[in-house]
Length: 428
Image: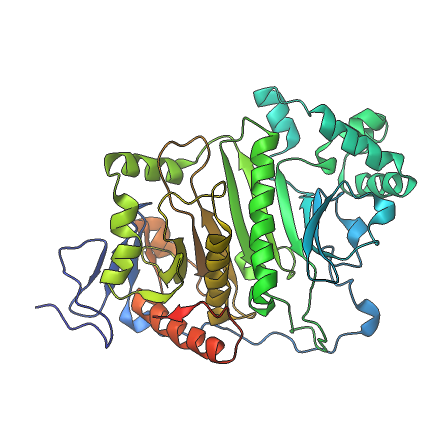
């Protein structure tokens, strides 16, 4: 006889292997898109999201804007930017490209798109394996940056710190061709390291501390940078989009940023997902929003998007899905963007600035002929996989989907009452 689920959780048929509860309360989950197997064991559940408190030290005003390489006072510690998004005095947002080093201080960059100094896939990878050559328009942008004396000094300094010394003897064209000036691994950096008016070093500016409007721009500039990568290199089949917040989640700096990495394949998990979708064209319909609704996992909704507690993930996860099954970065409408951004922003309210977390972006790559809804998974990195996972390929998740749902509903309702999230959001 199957034990009753906790209050608020619907009965889940034991025959449904994707999400079922055993008589002792163990929840077994299989991700329908990746095949990942996850267990949530009652005796390991109900853990707090936060661990030991972060150091609470007074900030030195002299260090303002210079806490890490991504800070607004250290613009020359990162490679020449590809794009910056600025906000004018009248509230208008616009993009600037090709800003030279001498003019970096002319505007305030709310978000910057910069090459990653330590790229996962280098520009040489594309040259040697795909015969890639930089187009003339890109070469001209690089030459213009080097023609500015401040730009030359900037680039030469970075080479001295991060590149082989022989690059300096290769002349300008060698420098221009280097991925230091731009490759296909980009970082989208937000302006603030700490919240405005912060007095202590633990008052970090996270996704949840952005305004609703700022977060929508953050999402939008990420989509723009993603489209730019696809357009710049026809050999890119997929751009992996993700966000690591705090060092336990893989961040190099505790400064808000996202990353985009262009690669020439889908990867094993995405290929498996495509195979499953070809075998079952209704895969995303059956195991997406409808499944979440049927299991009472929905957390909050808008007209064009739904947020729900995910299942079959290694870590407790909230997912934000577009309601339109064929929505992707190339056809997303303004209100769809606003709704997805609003729900993602609200989901970050649940964990706040102190919980390490990852965003994973999933969408239909342009070379794929099957519809895949745009969806973003927000994963709380509150546990460390141990030897059990390595030997069994079964992952232990410390909070089951209904526990995630309950925490999220309560936190989002509180944030709505305080006016911290978008008004179009309806708590489930």
